[in-house]
Length: 451
Image 1 (cartoon, helix red, strand yellow):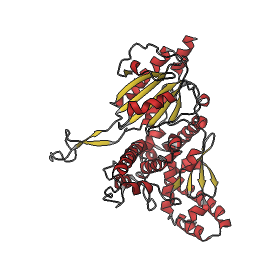
Image 2: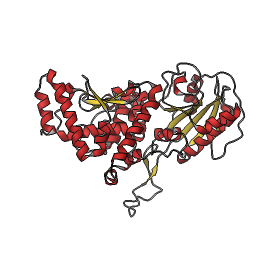
Image 3: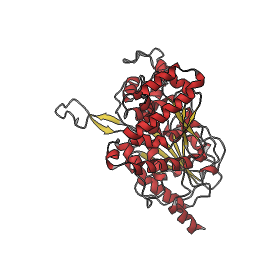
Image 4: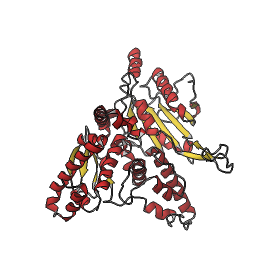
């Protein structure tokens, strides 16, 4: 049987019309190898539909209404000069993107020309830190350390790396505006504007992320259900020993959610925020655990979201009991983020005078709105409420019925929590992540008591 490296070398010598069948044979041999030697990745790949298409990148994922499809480009693959080990590493790379739901989590951000390169770097670094035998130039946390010119912890959630990159992008843009001839980075030798211009992996070298943006937002729930079924089926076929060799984050993804757990929108929200909100930062008030005898070395503390603003739609379709229940759920979810959390009611305007700080106990809710709904009023108020502060997050709690388009003037995270199905959401496309709470059983009980 031909080795994978031999098959890849042979692929480079074949004419274009013979590359497709050779690529199919390579894929089949690769999946068979992984099923024998690394069954987790082999099981996931065996459940993925595969298609061959001419693309600038060798492989990637493409969204379909009910699942994700593996897309391989024979021509681009023939130009890589990868070894068999590197090819297998890239197949594992694509699988981990799927396991951690990167395609649907970041589809909206990839549509932004300013955010797309940062998303690619953040998600690739989160995946590649767990892989060996990567092709030359693969992005890891070490790559981010060189780019950002600051310490970057390894094996963090992609949301952590994305937040660091966004902060760096904003700082470098401000610096370039005030000091066009800024000092070059000590590692790369490039000035900030040059770094921004080159902060995109070269096409044809790794997996493509373009297919992440091809899916419709209303199909995300169906794709996520398919993804969970793939992971469940894979987990059932692995022995305890095989599961024990997997990284902790992969094992966590394979652990099914108990059926008695409330609707998974809470889990979706926590996953969107990231396991560690914004990495770690030095703290001279703490001992350095590795070298406690050296008092000049700082310790570390978790750097968390510093500003969270929740905007509650009071247009009339949501009752006080519903709002109280959902804010109570958010209070418990956000308890792990010691941040400034403030709630603002809004309808056609944001009622800033009636805002309040969200703590462990909810105040008596008094409806102050009741008119129509204008989401743009929230985004118009954001520069005044949140400008210039790091770690910014805006959560909009709404029934989803308003205008069709909004403009977000700030680079910050936005999460929409809808009490209606995503398909009924009026804003298309919406900035940020959209999560529907329509199937929450407790919310359904509350609504049933009100009707």
